[in-house]
Length: 453
Image (cartoon, rainbow, N blue to C red; front, side):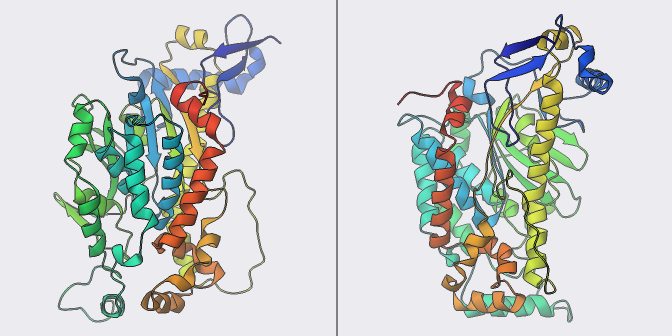
């Protein structure tokens, strides 16, 4: 069987790493019978979907159309996806710092499309607001995360913690005079973001060509829709799919507060006609907004564990604590959808690449693979968080002890709310090291070839 090599076709490892060449078995330039009947059917299915469906129907947000605008700046096709995860988003800062240091000084933002969810939306908005100088933007974000204290995110004084928690819990039994909508008061975060991000700069970044679009995702409590609020070039159309949509907006503080409003922990935020909560809820296709906005390759910074590591199953000795159950729910909302969507992307990419380019062209298939590079933590973040339980304010420690979050099995929830500079610094350092270990792949993503220093 002859083997042909097609240059400039992305190839993907099991970890989603971007390579440079794809090998496809073929004979005579067509899909061979050696692909098997199942693959022929898959090829036919891809052709049908490519001609009959828009780019991001239920088939996927997994493939880009080939009608690229030649006049667009090269970096407009680069997408950056920053997922949610509360304090876990400090890991993203370390990855961004490594990328900044791999680029020349004073280089503008290399990602034309930036999509953020929950705490990742905060990092995304900061990058978009200062897109004229990527390194300076990253260093500004790093400075905030490296000096974080919990009282910059939510009230930690006894009245703010116990008073609000008691009122919130008692509201399930006796209707309160004033509705208590969350366990914690995150008004300090609102004040921090006002100082941290100049939202009016986002429009300037788009006008100057440093940014094609910025997307912030939140979940509507009334409709159940996952809504990607995006600010971008005027030619980008809105979209609507099942339980998800993209709405042109002017990104402001309310969008970030809504996207990072962890259910029941932080209050929902009203935007237009509806109250919105954390964007990770019901976000079944986290890669979708970036592809709708025009990304042709994406760099995904996750906050879950090493996707290549085998799961470890241990014998269970006791009933799960409230913290363990809550942590399980948070992991489901913040981590699982992204991992599933990446797996789906890889699977459909492989299906498309099994068909030689000339055969796709003759069949009228307008889809091509989307380059994808995934960088995620090399060590479990919940185990790191467990080391820092004692550094939290006493009021928070007392509350977490009551729900079992100070035990190893309940440390997952701690990894989301531990906004302390010592924990954040360890995550930033790990993100930096993990990204530097993938230096050649990052440079290949950004430049097409590794750079010579």
